[in-house]
Image (cartoon, rainbow, N blue to C red):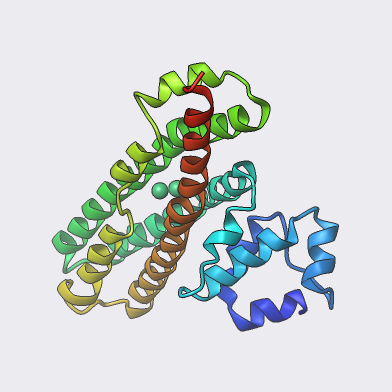
Length: 239
Ligand SMILES: [Fe+2]
Ligand SMILES: [Fe+2]
């Protein structure tokens, strides 16, 4: 299949494809040609793109064949995208709404306050994954593959392991639903429909992307790390 046709099929895949370092200007090149030119693992690319495109498709067994490093590289690019692009863009639009509005200022200030809380929450969620969860997952893979610092890791597992992550991993998509509802249901009819629609579309897109992102964390990264943790425990604790 040609890469250009992928975008014609689902333009929401644009930021997903960009995360692989693949930019527009595809010409008539196929997915395979473009992946090869950009040193992208094509099997991983296809699983990410297909599962993003179809929410009922998630090849869990396939995902177990990719390294944690590969999976986390992708997840980290998505984090950058949320914090550097999506969230600031939504913030900018909400600020324009505040400036634009004279007669329902209190309500819109409330929307802004709610969004600021959300921004704080998503930033903390991402920071914890970047600083604690992902480094831990990479450490497990390193110990598993290179038998490096295995005992130190097993010791650390008593304090923090992937099971703790799965219990603490909260749903950052849920609050977006409330945020959307403030605009859809509770704000008085807006003066600037187009601005409100643009905010809503961006919120829907972010929610969709975050759903996919969390699914990769929970159904691709977590089971793979837990399997390695268990194997390391049973191999090294017996001795
Ligand atoms: Fe994440
Ligand atoms: Fe997460």
